[in-house]
Length: 161
Image 1 (spheres, rainbow, N blue to C red):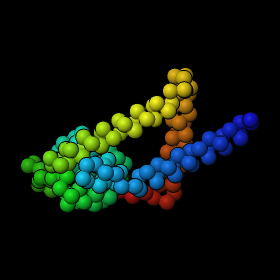
Image 2 (tube, helix red, strand yellow):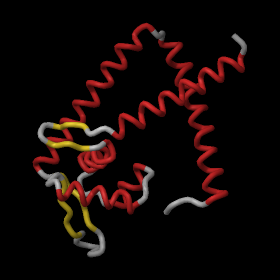
Image 3 (cartoon, rainbow, N blue to C red):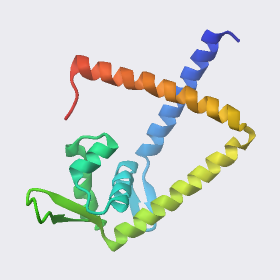
Image 4 (tube, helix red, strand yellow):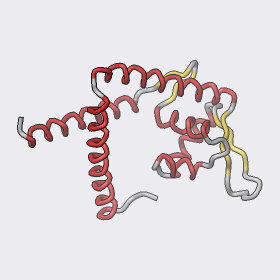
């Protein structure tokens, strides 16, 4: 197979992966009696990892807009998973923590991610360490290309926040 054909096949597989990840992220996930979408679970995860974090800090870590994160935080507060308290030194800032139910969802989310990783790692057992290292290098270069696309688009058309 010629290099161009292999690269096109790789491109097609990347497209498939993107479509599957997009579909997965759009599905509701059950954590006990709570139902969360991936965007919500990511925020619960960040608050669980960094108790007292602010919405702005979450947005920076997840590379999302503060406005989008703020809307999700409001939903999580309404679901009883997150609490916000006014910062003692800067009254304009709110620090976020998980409630008892939020802690349970956080732990369930970690367990679910670990299970998904185990399944994936098991599927990849037939791949040698050398092949995995090569794949990782290829993926890093593809990600560099995607980042370039994003940066060029932002420069040309502007970006949010």
